[in-house]
Image 1: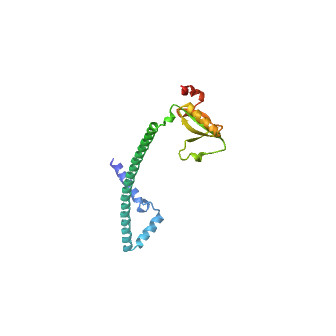
Image 2 (image 1 turned 30 degrees about the vertical axis):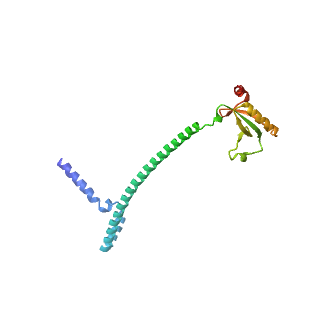
Image 3 (image 1 turned 60 degrees about the vertical axis):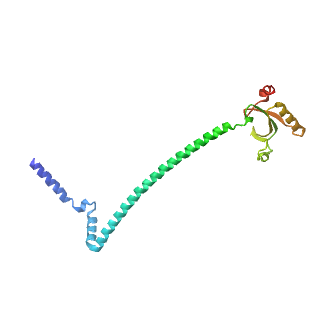
Length: 198
């Protein structure tokens, strides 16, 4: 057993003896010789300056590493703040949409419920009067079925709508007719006429 230990120690010593600094540093023999020669040619002041520069760069690297760590923390805090604010914005948008939906439901126009008779003046495919309705006129313009339809007036009573239609025809609007709407949607006259006359 002692003989094995002796051979083992001698083997390791031989290995270390053959592994000179030339091969252990990762340099080839030529590179090692070149750098060794340059080291010998260097005067003490240059060597001192080189060591001081190395220390200064190591300190600067340490400072930069600390700054990088600090900035990483700042960025993480800012990212968290951005995420928090984005969540708040999302909640505010959802609240506003909810309020708008509620507001729209509360502010439904009385004319959108029940039967309403409107007088359609005309339907043209090449004549546009939209600029006349910009200031909230009672004139309603609808794009539908390839026509631009013009509707004027709103009446709960069929007879009143019919009188208005007749007056329009008398002044020259020959294509005026009554178009009924129920709950905000246009419906055939026959579907609501009995309900309106009662």
